[in-house]
Image 1 (cartoon, one colour):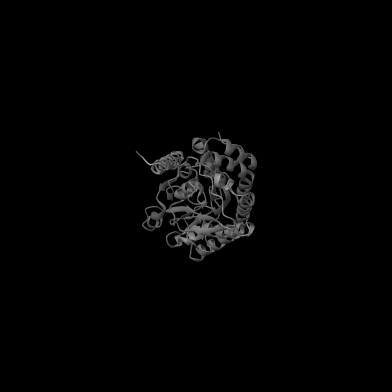
Image 2: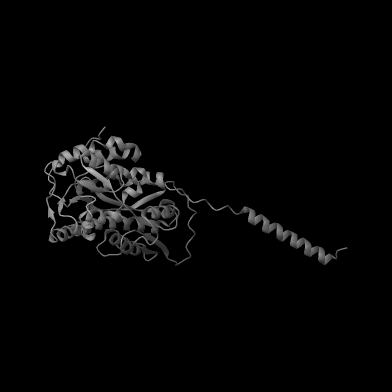
Length: 363
């Protein structure tokens, strides 16, 4: 027969085990990793202890060079957000793909692994098709037109990006138009382009544009491009002046044609749920710093572009300027738009852009 003391001890142990079992059963299972392109529901951000800084991890794929647009923009944002948050936000920059590719960076933002990443818009469209608006060839022919669309559609694009990918853009930045270079001859008209093999990224809209010009586009990965030009596998390529200079394409290319069919454009994205979990003061500091960094980058890139073109011409490249018949280049390239509306989530965003620019949507 159990003593009174032993009975009491056994009862205490039974109650303790029951409590442990109840607590463990009440814990929710970890959320599965989000699939590419799907919005993520991140856990609510834990409350920051009083006085503790918010660590803001910002990743990009370019080198940490002072004249690189990704790095310059990241540093500008860091400077501004730390100022506007009164030191409550500490931005840690991870350049040169330290944390993975651009698309991996986007997924890491979706899943709350990092707070921000910058990437080329064509890599963002995998997750947020509406941003494919900026892949449409000749949607604008000047920086002024591009800025009108950025500024006029920022909120509309954010709504779509939140809906499609669970993220919003805090910065839109650019690196200039992707100009044409080649090693064979000056290209001043469409007729001059005929017969040339031009390296392009594996991007259906860019491939379609060059085909519309009776040219032979050859998709080649970026890391193989210089060798392909050097070994004459292709005659030319298209990239902004800044890339042509930094990649030393002047060693394997002779002629420049300043076409305006596509601008290098990229967003810096943050996870919407994480942003909304912050205090109004921190959230406003992030958004204000992002907008100001975007505006500042515009002046920076234009000066950088001039210097890059001078580097290329000083090295012996010949700049023919814009084609004399660029209206025809634009007409042909825009004729392929209807074939790709399904890939950019329909015509809604393109119609809004054309309204801002005073144009009509190709049907």
